Length: 608
Image (cartoon, rainbow, N blue to C red; front, side, top):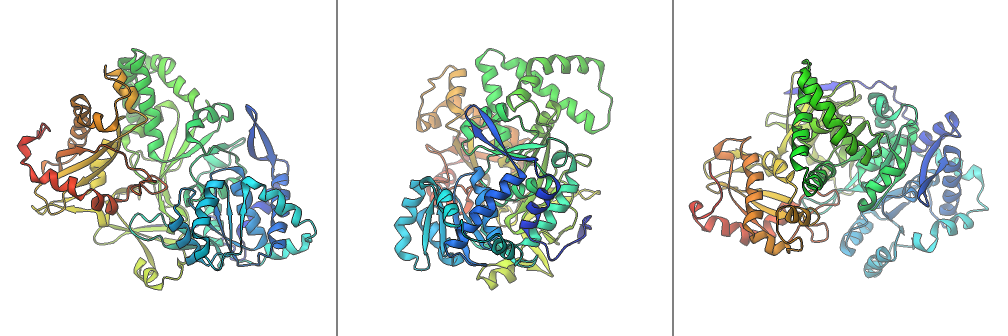
């Protein structure tokens, strides 16, 4: 059994809780700008002291409303400054937040509120309130619903005016490291969401150690970031807490359509994103160049960037001719992409799915080092991550300090350490099944190199076994296909079938530009585009590229382009945009059956 375990570099403090991180920040740098909030066309800074003052005032409001230490409070909202304000106010009041994705259905809201035993709920919008209202009659424990759009923060703050500071300080200090900090429900990609009990120590110890490991990213002077991934997910939640500990100035932009505008004015030094964001940046730039008659230049620039990065990573000398090409493309292409991201981004932390070496090398040559990491809700987000002075493109890095990672005999990744959750809420059977000799079973398959850098190769439960007995990891095929600009999502199928095939959806955002660039009507519907020969040929290009990386027995022989898209609203994607494979296999069983009903040779799909 291959094991890599890294000792913690910060001594553990079992008495510390998350609120201590803010208190330490205020004591160390009281006037440091900890947040920036939108203010007209610019941003207004909020100091560490002013943030804690607002946190304490809101915490008093929760106390005045009847929230007791240990009470659970649900929260549905987008990624904004108010999200972290409410989060820390609940910590200071001694309460436990139960975040709920802002896209959750009434039934999902009901399940999480009911299972967690939350007696209070705060929502952001009238739409959120309407969804709660549908199921409120089935939630007898629910005492009150506060609405941000109706001024809940101001109202609670006013109600708490008479609560003594000493009461907040008493409540703030009740929890120790072993106590529950938050109850985060899994996204439900493999069934009904389970509540993960994450402790204060999970966050405190991981935060303190990760800040040391990522010191070039988060502890440099004037470090800043814009959060746009949902803070209801553990990935952004952890980063928001890490930012407070490290003194990173944080802004928020919940509307990804406004992201480039926000980056341009905020000018962050690092980003937190999922691979799909980097794919969109690359594909949008490529299609924009194509529309302006500069597609050939962009593709040459991309090829040079990738080759340049590979040589740097291998420690090889850059040929003089490449230096000249690189300098030219830096002026024509790379500098414009850097400027589009604000001009100051030096690092990006990427998680939730593999990024792929191509994009990793491309952005590296732009001057943006993408530090891929790996983790789950049960590991408080990161278990491994590439670091500025220890990174390998195409891997998810080594274990963080205080974390151990090992591979079971069947290749399953197992984790133990300061970041591993305590248990599943009200589910001892699932908790017992999740651990093997004290190590958490992730359900993911991976491999190590000799230096302990981890590479994710697939999900254990998603491994396809063909009728010929060939084991196929879908992710190895899906990730390169998904990088094509017109592909929205893809699911590889073929379990117990004679060959591998795929279901493909088109990207409604990128498709119109691609159609226009290729002399087709930009307003072609998804259904019509799915039948278009030029579109099918482009998808074939993506599939051929993916097939080039696997054996013939693993290659995709046929594919179907579906007439619609998979979204979170349709029930086919999780809030972090991961596919719900089981749901898709069930809902599109007829489409899959149709693929195998016809002989392979009747399709125009290349088999070579």
